[in-house]
Length: 64
Image: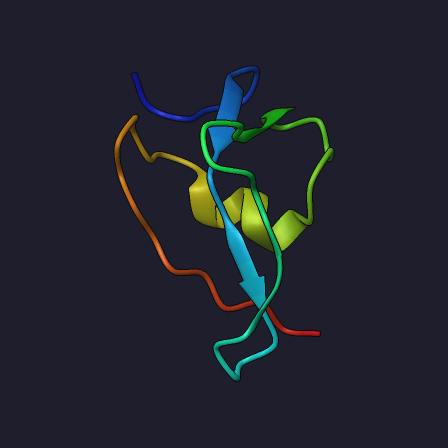
């Protein structure tokens, strides 16, 4: 199943400001969940995740 509008999505993530030092991250075994297409996360990230499937990985760079 691919991520599309209305999908409940769980993601493991690590957030950094370009220097590689994590400033936020999901806890191991506790992914962040959201309802795709409802504006619950940053729009650029939501767009980047569209169409991915379970187990896919992706590095996303967002503009400030």
